Image (cartoon, rainbow, N blue to C red; front, top):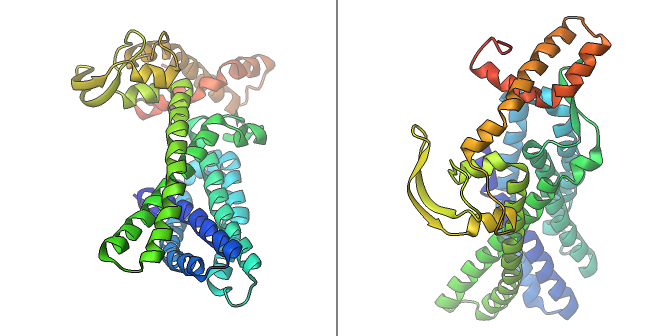
Length: 353
């Protein structure tokens, strides 16, 4: 719930910062006071939204230690790195310069204040980058391995973490969506002003900037959203099948489920309304590759669960003191599937049996 409330404010922050930077850039280039008024007006609304985003975000930060303490300990070496960088670099950057943005109009030159506004925009988007790098690792855990001595996941490659394809796709898609949100926000209020016949010159200029920015952003969202769907189909096949309630592997190209009622008891989808071929094209970018269904994925991954059981047994031996080369080699051969064995602990205390 905390993440849900926090993300109500994040997209608007991402979009508004660049709109403010564009408006102020026009003011500096043209010298027309109306663009300064626009920047200050929309800046006030941005400030309210930013404050709400910060308060809900800080609450979520505390939950890493209160609600998810074991998770924070287990993956803190990887998960904590991008969050720490986000706090020290991006959050401090935007938090410092947002004060200068509001209180520096009469203390800074035009160019200096414009630089401040652009730094706020860059800082807010860098903040999204590092947070989504952490989130991307949760979806596709690359650049890390399990250390049986410390019983923790440890970072092995920061570059793999940083350039995780899932993280990069999530970042560009999320910020582009934020730009669309910011544009629609400005368009909506500007339209209301135009309908009421109030501040026509102000509203028209705001509408023009937001519509151009929004059009470019919408086109970006379409392209980057397609890339996001492709990455899910590449590295999270089970997630994609679950989202689509794709119980059985359909002939290529698979249809996109527009509406359906999943029937888990009978493992079928009732009342499905589908668009032919679309899912196959999104997930595989082809018309001859199949989107694997849930039943086939379960059968394919049964071997990984059995490897996980073996890894769990070998981990117990290592923790018990048997650190012979034979045991270590056997464990290293199956430790990538240890998580599958650990998942069984939810259902039984006898994982190995």
